[in-house]
Image (tube, rainbow, N blue to C red; front, side):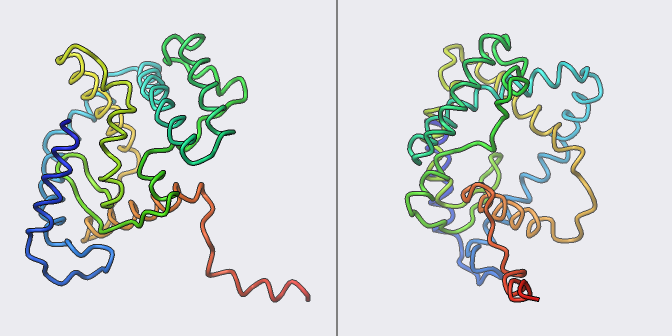
Length: 237
């Protein structure tokens, strides 16, 4: 498995990397991670982003929407698998319904018919979230070449995510790579509108956003608000 080889290689490099003191206890391998982030950032700046800009410029919006719907529909399969493992049977049923409706009435998922029928798309589930529900700790933050940010727990879940991804079972090698390239391009194009001036330390910002987003997904959007907790005392006035 390519994903498993990548994960194991990164684990070994991270363990053998010089353990310089990190500025964040969640990121003990910061020196190694920053080096990988720099590589990814150069690849994005000079290769991935320009291609994504060209794709967004020349591709009609309905086509972009259809491509996004197609890949979103395929993600319903691991969503269902992980929802069942987490005991979220209601969500698993809804995601199964979405997949069946969009695969048939939605022409292989190109049209999101299910949303128009009152079954909206959920945030999604992966095996890293399942491991979190099972009590497996985050582990250190880890930046992977090309694949981007993970925690050690999320990286450990990648082989299962690979197994449950329908794209894995495309028999023709070239077609498989082309599908993955189109998915990457579609995902990157979708992020163009979110780009902004993020200050001097892009690495730290991306790390914090990733970790906060993962916490949000693991808790199904229920994030503890420690700031406003004491304000409940004013309810009696």
